[in-house]
Image (cartoon, rainbow, N blue to C red; front, side, top):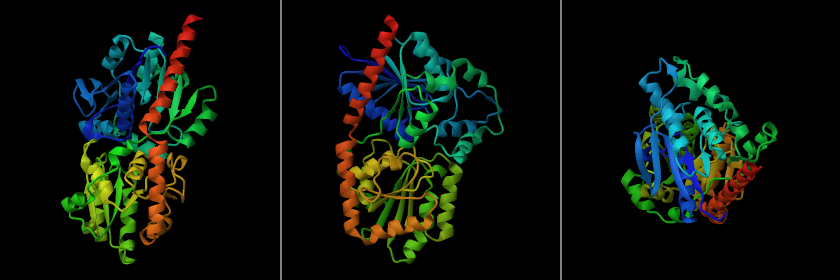
Length: 420
């Protein structure tokens, strides 16, 4: 197109100390689009933060007040909804989107009532919107859906009328494009939304950031011996991430004379689960062999050091829409063992650049880890192939160029439609 686009990214939240894959994807996309001459701004509710203007690496952020339309919701439950994806509403955010000048496109990174707000504003202003399904829609396990709704069990929801008003159930149908990060999601949406434009657009990685790190410094800081094999998991401390499975394997690994140490790094989104993990460590008698770090700042050098301190990367998630941490582990040169769930098998090639295991198959998990610990040649091959793919196929620059092509296409189609 002849001019730079002005894109507004709408997210459910955007805070540095509760970072996840969605935030990484939004920020890296904004960085790349800015480098290509396009304006970006993030607009979101002030969940886990405060209202007002902010910036992250030069990208403007505007946070607006919001509320949960439930009666009888206590403060602890509201915090849990903030952490895990509650169905909120914001009149202030709607007003802001209605009045911001010169918007070419809205990029929605969430759904539900907030998605309905974006849909409504886009239709009123006659501008297109696209939606990325970071958390999945069609392939979310029932138990995870129940867990997300757990904080509202004792409250009464009055906000369905708001969802009806903004058309929250029609967000996908009316989007100019639906961007998915899972091949499984892509296949199912093509069946359920046959008239929609659906694009598979995986997440990426800034491989150069993870290329070098000081693993020895990390081990020294956390008291992990140089001789021990460190098994690393990076992800929210949450039942979805299934760190408990890795803990269950540790006693057997030690019994088989594998001198191993488990390290979990991630922001705590379920306090009860966090306490259970600590208690389980004591119950199994492995507390001295486990380090749990409740998250780093998104730009922390310590996270990179952690990858370089590790020997293997484990991702035993019950559900994983994509698994951006796999790309980070690849970029750092780590072999990966991951659950065969969600978006992971859509990009990890079993036996070539990672090992994929059934999420509930504890025996297969043990065999996969045992195999890598005893076969350095296999470890090196998987790590090498993964790193090559992280660099060649999953750079944020190439992913963002593909995204820009989609942006330009839907904006052009909107202009043609307006002229008819």
